[in-house]
Image (cartoon, rainbow, N blue to C red; front, top):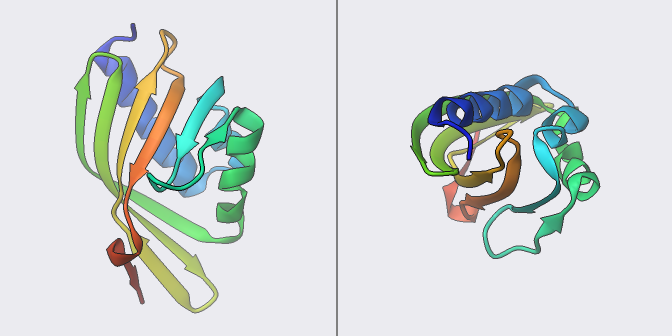
Length: 123
């Protein structure tokens, strides 16, 4: 099991990659057989290739992230953050709560994002 500091660092790498990285950069943080459910209740994406495809839609937007809270317990982390995406003249802000599990190398093995349409604001 990874140390809490390794998990905290992995969460920060994830938020940095979501803000400034490519879909491949983000997917590289995941285990090869990881699962992603974003938002919870939507179809799950399994495997790094499917996860990279999921994040591909972010590449055309300017993005920023801000960590709002983080809790680590065992091999898992739950964290709230703000992500702002800008495409053309539209700004979209959402504050999901993500729950992730990690392997011994602090690679993401599962991610579940808790948010819904009511949590999105447009500017």
